[in-house]
Length: 261
Figure 1 (cartoon, rainbow, N blue to C red):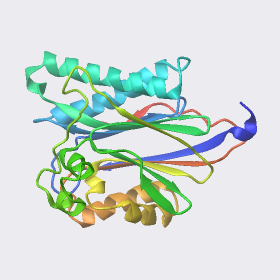
Figure 2 (figure 1 turned 135 degrees about the vertical axis):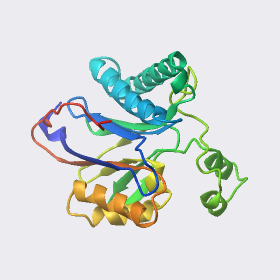
Figure 3 (figure 1 turned 60 degrees about the vertical axis):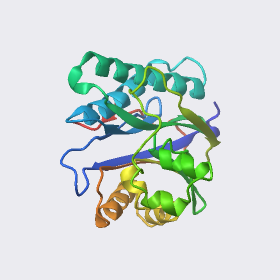
Figure 4 (figure 1 turned 120 degrees about the horizontal axis):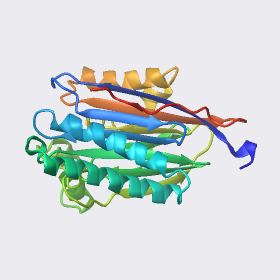
């Protein structure tokens, strides 16, 4: 690859328990050396949600990183999501206390000047360019599918008691079908991976305003989470931000970082 085609990649991530929950079932993780990033929102009784989300992140990042010389970014991400699903599902099947646990997952991998987004559930990815912000992913949730099918209005969906009912999740069945999206990236582009603990309080326009008015990515993560908390944050809130810029040298590597439990 020619040096002028390289992009420098900055990353920042932050998670918060929110205002109502006693434990954090969200997890995030990434490996800059292979440019794989993931955010998960767990579900299940007791500590099962925490276990599902943490395991899904670590298994996906590890499997993706082990396949560094195999296939395209889309293929590697797709099979890494399937692998993470199997591992979470097997653990739930082998432990009565963990039966029924699962997690949403939104992930991204960067390949040159292309980003691939994969998701299962209602955690989302947003793409920011030239001041605009667009949701990349489609929610796998009951209300979102009702809106897409013309059965429910967006306003009704926003106030529905079924907002948390998701139709696909990692670990709840032996097989799962993730959605994949690809986009070319340019210097200045920003990608947000986030859980519904944020998106129930901030739309794309509000997200863009908060990110673009912050001095750096860590401050932007704080601003996003504080916005959710100012409005009650009934769920955990997690944000992971990627920003692309020109770079003449390859991006430095970093060790895998995951949310501690």
